[in-house]
Length: 241
Image (cartoon, rainbow, N blue to C red):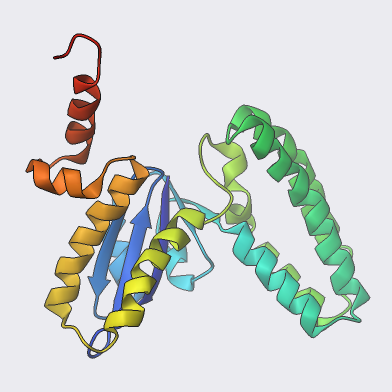
């Protein structure tokens, strides 16, 4: 399972930073453009599940995908604010909420396990059957239905796998770590300096995920975070001194 997100680089000239994050590792990459072929090339051999937002470039990547439902829910809320008197839209949003809420509750109780989440598939199918017969009288409702239909195969992938989340929080959290620095260096650094920093930031964030002290890792001279963490754990075992 892999999370992906991107943001402007904040260096002199054009550029973007992509972040790839798993449950235990983070990696940042600088790219001069936002072109989709960059991320396609990076993930051409990836065979897991890619968790992302709705940026169109991700659609061309040939792997199983899970769209971030939190992003979608935010968009639903924005549409409701824009159209507060649209009853068709309200009914559609309510139906989606009724569909997703039990899934989230299952995750909270049972974790991200397909043997527990799979029971929700039948309700997903029923929901999509309703889309073809209702909710579509207004333009705003039709717009949301179009997105749901277009992304049907990537909205609820997490129900069919173990340990695949329904949101892109990992990548968003990692992007925030970079954004904190970008506010300080924006327009004041070079591409080379940024690339060097992204290597350190990748190590720092991965250390956090693995509960390893970043400075201790740097001082150790080790080049493998897992090996360093294992050696520290072994030294703490009784009789290891």
